[in-house]
Image (cartoon, rainbow over all chains, first blue to last red; front, side, top):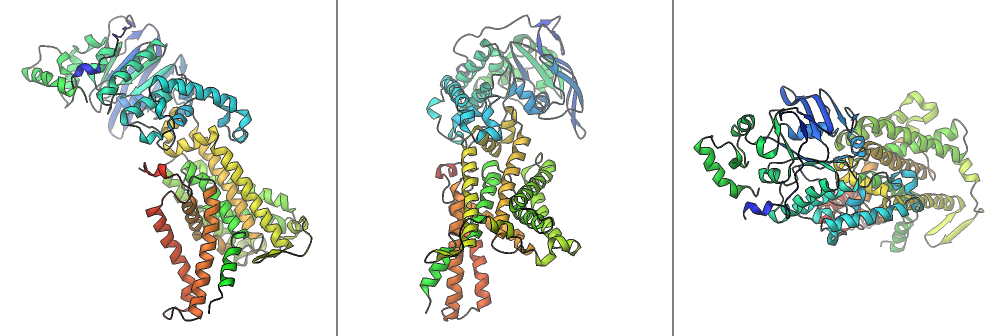
Length: 310
Length: 327
């Protein structure tokens, strides 16, 4: 399997001109959707996240990369309310959401997926989808007993769910338990379910992890579609090929800090990024790094084409 | 010789017995907790005790009519569910299990203690609270029915009331679990973080489920004590485990399962204990005394639970397909 399979079916249109001034950690954005300040989270003696300032551009696809243990997922958890920072302030769409519980964050239109896919196994695929819809009156205990309060709404939700399932090519599976899907199909289902809530910001935690190459392409297309439909995407990813192909902006984290930001092709040449990656064992696409690095790195880069499918 | 007609008749009586109705109702509450929401409630006996005592004390001490006493029992169980849920529902599932089994024991010991003997009757329990409920009995005095199902007017009234509650509770559960509310509840059972990420207030839903199942438990406690006296030793943890056995027998995430499970459980238990007792009498089991025979049924319950969990974990009414994916 060659790495070219991971290329989206059409050449993605990159969004540029997102930042103001020189790309550097914490650079100002023209139109940020998330602005975070002084976010710090430590577990015992370990400082997992220590971000001074970070802005996520609206209407673009931003990749959050970094070696293992850089604090990417922890930052995700903090921004979505799944974890509470020691200190820090952040806003979403101009409103502070620091300390707001996860479910309220999701209701405001900032929806996330998980690194370890959370398909609701013993619910059918269609039920998984319907669960994603926001503001259902049938979800209130008192109205739930009387179907005439919510039957019409349920039909609309079902139509929307079927439409999305068809786009994600899961419509044939709608009556199966989600547990019977393959790993890649579960990723698709999780993404489709997130879209049921009509979000403005979609946060994907390693959308490609464990997805077979045949499904990678369709996942990439779906992520690009989100941008076309006006949503903002922030994703954590290890697959450098994917990052370079679809990301408009890249934020690099190492040891809890943002060490670099910039255009995906430029940022990989940043010495701070090279420092961050070379110290750790990793399956990154080293071929994109600065050519002045050692022979050993070039050898690694040659092997990389085989490894990229992970 | 064994009197088979009488043995089968006694077993058949369990089908309509108010005890069976009470267990079915309690198991239905547990199905909401455990089967649908994934809450490990090991204190269903506590909810039943609160329902029974709430009814008994408000009738005897405060002279409430039966319907007001029933509401008191339900109200007390709601408060109990809130007290249990507020600190534990944000934590991992096992904390609820620890807290519920302990709280149920606290409730039972509270009713047993001598300090409140004038209200609770201590270890002797309460009786004589049937008056107001008996007065609203529309059935004229007399004996009705056929064969083993011949009862007087009060026994029929208790049975109609008990099974009526079971049917209402089953209809509510069935409606709820087919609704979007039930979808959220089942989603929480599968993975509460995923449901939280979709904007649902998981804590609130778990609380609603805990309260609803607890209310079913308290109603079960009232049905349980209507034909007899309230005795605190009836509400030991073994009661909760019998209800779990019924739930697993019928199918944890089903509506019919707890009801049919309760009937099958009591008919089988009654048949088995009746058979062993008579078999000992006529000398078929010479190595066993009558006392030992009485204990044998509990050994059987244990074996049945084990066999069920090993060979048919989905129960009688559970969906076989679900089993293919048990983690």
